[in-house]
Length: 371
Image (cartoon, rainbow, N blue to C red; front, side):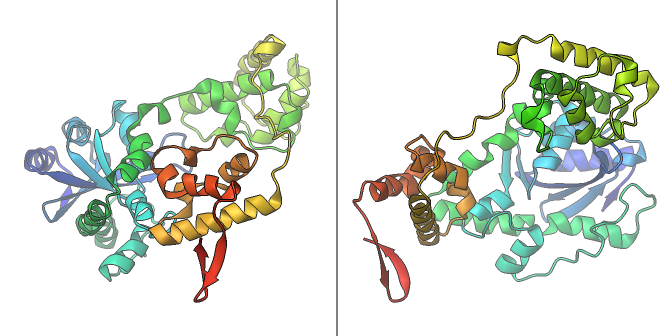
């Protein structure tokens, strides 16, 4: 059902207030803006699917209040969808179930797509022909609406299958641990002082990081103020160039290669440079230090083999247990996330036994075994 009038939206809100859970997805565009343009909200409730049109001039407040209540919100790979809710309300749902994360916990691989899970678990096909359509254009075609609604159509079945499997295999705490960040507002809140961390450049290590921090902060603020992608305010290359050789005058700033900014931005950008130069050396941000020593390659490889074996035993996606960085830290004798919580039971304690020489590998019937 297509919801494009206040009357239809009111009836929908009245209907979903009593629902046990709500399946949720969005269609948005952000290629030319900083903030995503919300073009469609898809909802699945009690076996019915609804497409709510945010561009129809309706007040979405009643719906957003329901979505940020205590109701269970079922979604797939929902971080960007939740970011949209947070941008609109500065609130988040209190109770979510992300089928992509749940699938990882259940051993369906890293970041399985909705289409893939529907095929693998439900043996059904999702038509993705309209995936890259212009969702801001109006009117929407029937095929666009049908495609959008299919993104919530199978979520109830996926939820039941994955939730039952998690319950049966006693992995509820694993799922909760992985979903914590989804409903933690600090992951969506503005943090201008850390904007420099998003700058990717090989010369970053040679920059005045105080200047890089302040000009990156300046870009973040301007991008939000003018609702433009960061790179359209000023590119990473230009930020790094400014931080390598901080200009103190307009003339010097204009010599930065390929710098293309509005003349009205120049005074505030120079102020940001000045603010970065004024930061005391001990207070400037620092790059993450490189390891003082390199872990033994053989130890790292053995731990990776162990990780693979434990993931196969427990039908888990390796990404959930440990990254290469985690393994390298552990090989150097440092703390690692997999030494704590449920990961320690699944992998961490066995990894400790491996480096202590208490266990080894053998091949049995063509498969790697731990002895």
